[in-house]
Image (tube, rainbow, N blue to C red; front, side, top):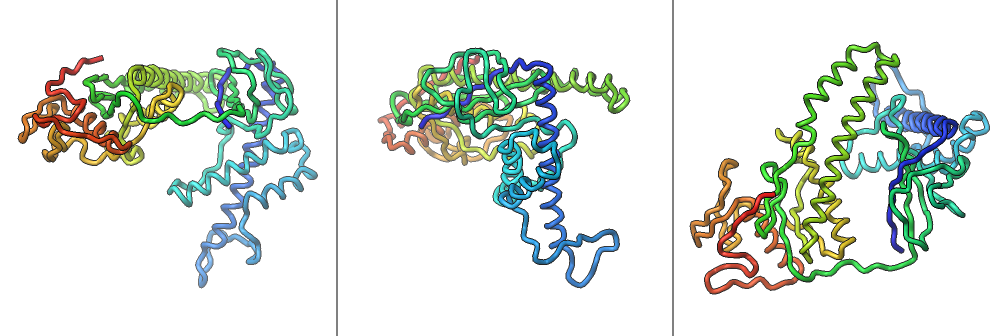
Length: 404
């Protein structure tokens, strides 16, 4: 099986837009109620055995089982008999909201995420149809369960023979969007290592440096928009909270954020295609992106969007038949790519790599990218030999670094 997700902008009618809004609000209330039920159960089990709180207490029987996804789905079915508004939303959509809460708790237990939070009004921005059986798609229209046919702007064609397996409706400041997951009954093999390899080193001075000498300057999407963002946020603060003018000012802030995110994603996609154009293998560093985002330069790391770039690059490599792999990122800037000798730590101001052992000189980031390439070739089983003059195959003795 082969799955692809297509994103299109919806063009709903006024009645359909109102239905989308009502469904989001009902899903938000279901999410908050289920979260409150789980939170109360946990707090009732966390009090001291020999003392009671003077502020409040949770009176929950001792034999009450821990709320789970299965138990809350069962309770949701019973709640529909008492609350008629729950019947407006398809049952599987509400179940997916409870599953979303379950995923949040699993992420808290297994990946050290924070405790799930309640969603304020307007913060629930998507709902999912997990099953889309029958005829659900035709040119320029999509058919949602219960809601019916909705117009969409089909900006790209969809190959024939696929089945719509899932649909996610997303609300953004620029409108409503749908993400269609389409499945084809075919088996596509993963790309195998072949042709010429490229190592990539990422950084804040140069967004990427490749092993063949390409340096790409980092664009500052968010930093360049900060001044305008500050002015728009000041306009929001001057408006009366909850008024129509306050909503309009808040929408202008949201549009700027969306514009910055769209510019960043578009640039990442174009750069990924440029990298894959003449390469058969692409190797990148396996970085601790969460740790980098929490450092003193966290804002700039988040503005660069290295995690999104790696994801887009991996998808582009798969589409274009290029092998993609992450390699160990430790000491890539401390090893000479020519002779393999560890040269020690470099100061951030030192932008040139000069090996005291073999005399190899090149840009610091290019040298790190060449080390990434060597590690990648070793990881896929390529034998890396040394020439008589002490240079790795594929690494020239003199490097001229063009700047994009």
